Length: 222
Image (cartoon, rainbow, N blue to C red):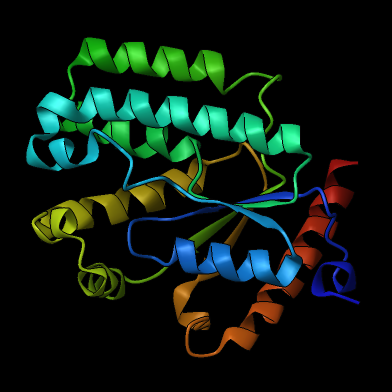
């Protein structure tokens, strides 16, 4: 019996991993997909035509970046559910509007008209009964110093040039966002409670928590 069957997780489940930059979403996505024999859906950073431009000039490129992300994530969500589920997804579509676009509007790096256009489009595309929401969102959280350390270790040039104040802002906004998020069930995991790189076997404990959590939420929804 594999871990998915052992802990009663449906083979067509869709689980999304959320959390700020550097918190370990990709590592968690890979580990869970291998443990559950699921497919992965990763954010395509290297092929993004706006990301480098955005880090050079937030105000000029923030709207373009958010529209690009919205289109790509919407297409990917549609593909996952048309395939029949069985996916672990790296980053959710909800973070774009709940955190990034909102932050740029409030800080003056996105025009208010552009922000309204973006949020109206997001609401029409995503926040409807027709949009397939995941079965579970796993939110990875941890102390800011640990997250910044991971960002530095990763070594992406565009992230190394970003001021520490930006990561502080992101950390705070993520915490506020998840406290009010209700589009699907949320399981919070503290990154200090596991180390999937040094101790990959710890993924079973996480799978067990997922199975128990999904069972409890299914009972509550009946």
